[in-house]
Image 1 (tube, rainbow, N blue to C red):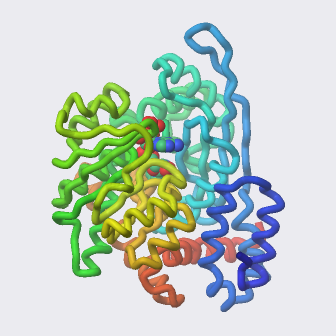
Image 2 (image 1 turned 90 degrees about the vertical axis):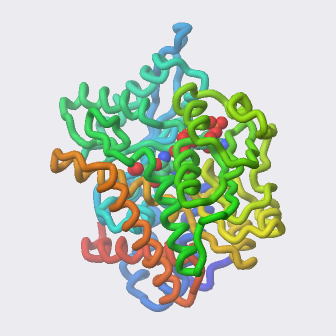
Image 3 (image 1 turned 90 degrees about the horizontal axis):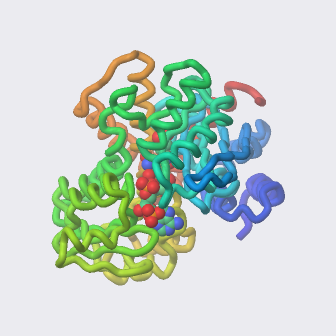
Length: 447
Ligand code: NDP
Ligand code: 2IT
């Protein structure tokens, strides 16, 4: 579908030409530019200042070879990336994804989303993302360390506490961040807040581990409150069983909801009595097992191979695994089963058609760039603690996170109302995130 605004159409066509076949990146750009129609229509300076032309082009895109030796003595070669997308409002900030599906398109889509997400937190961070097609699954600790050290050997030339601060994402948790931090320190001789999600003994922040999942529930609770409802007694379906999913499940339960599903890339669990978070943590965080192990802890639960979380009857759906995991067919099942809320813990987990269908069906839909912003917001709090060389309590960080998510909800709700998109939090998030970046880009001239 063509854009109504000729300038947006022209920019989008150029993005298509320059990034052929990069479907995730094009999907993310299209969704954001659609929200800008009324904004750009009102103000010609976006075109005269080339704001949209510039915001869709990464400031820098680095691709590099990552060679390492496996436990059998064989040389392995992976491809590493860092996309430094936009630094208008602060140093580049965003995670590192380690997954075989990682390619230029995935890294660019994530970096692009990160610009608006980081702006929405209200904290000074530009947008970036990195990663590799390395698959951490089934690798020994020594192999993980060898990969991380090789990856950081190149990446260390491009990052720093005041230039670009990576963090975790799919396949990158505390273990990987530790190995990367050690290698950065060795190469650069700097003990600084160059990565977030660090261990608590070397500059990590309390509550960063929990932050994305907790933040997802804080914003969902606030949205429900504003519609005269709450999470209490809701039946919740969660996908994923990683960092975001685990702490989303935990906070949902603390708010009085019952979470009945979780999943990994092989299959999914249905536990009618509510997911046992302690068991899930032991399986995933300690033993690094598959979800098939869950039945050993909860014999009354069901394990199914393949995909199926969205077929379960629920009030609230929280996709927390990966992009495009909730499609139109899934959205139809959710609506038929009476779901009222979809809030994205993952980045772009809902396809465009599914999002449209959910919104048309009156489901409250919170997009990832708003709903999962608690993770990066708490990373910014980790950066602050590193800069002042202090360590805040869990309660201090958690209460700041809660306030950030509540403010964020009102910010996107107001932006949607201001441009005639009432209740459309996708448009609200894109516009609210964009406003601050545009002001900064305009003030800094054509760079
Ligand atoms: P983890 O690696 O901890 O967990 C990812 C989970 O999703 C695992 O259960 C994994 O299963 C599943 N998964 C990943 N890829 C696929 C796939 N292609 N198909 C099916 N299942 C898949 O990652 P996180 O929890 O950190 O990240 C989850 C999502 O949240 C991502 O979209 C990420 O970008 C986003 N996010 C993360 C933040 C953070 O702070 N960590 C912050 C904001 C967003 P398996 O183990 O089988 O691969
Ligand atoms: O997608 C994301 O926001 C993250 N993976 C977290 C990024 C960060 O810098 O904490």
